[in-house]
Image (cartoon, rainbow over all chains, first blue to last red; front, side, top):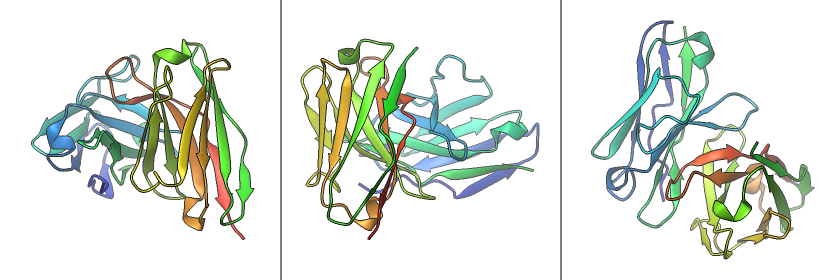
Length: 110
Length: 120
């Protein structure tokens, strides 16, 4: 199972919005609603910020939103803040009853 | 509160085996599955497999299925991940993670991670 494809890096200024894409296939992202997104700071465990494409766990800011079209899912962060600077990973359930992660995107807040 | 507490860091030689434990508390252990996710230095997470805590049923990732065994001890609410025939590229942080609510496939709670270093 190949990793999902994410841009290696994105950047934005405080207050702006950015979008991170996550491209898979019809056997994973395109075939299932079980796409989730994780935020990870250096030396820490990942933290789920979205699941089922667009559902936010309790306590996660409404500035994080998600969508999916075909084989590509997207994470949008609006009103960018300095403490959003982190690595972001998508993941998806697959037709093989496994889970695959994306390669990760480093977000830099300028 | 939900807690997953893992065993400590280990150094192993190539060809050896490692067994990582994950003790759960703060919830009913058999109500949620446990997955294992590893992360090599500077790399993204990699899902290794899942164990159904009520019955021990497992599902493994293809690239480790011949070398990994995931088990649970419901009497102590502890999950275990055993990886055999270690290689240098098995070096990384290993996490146990609790699944989301029933039917939800995402990783809601993470252990603190166990650093496994494979080196001669």
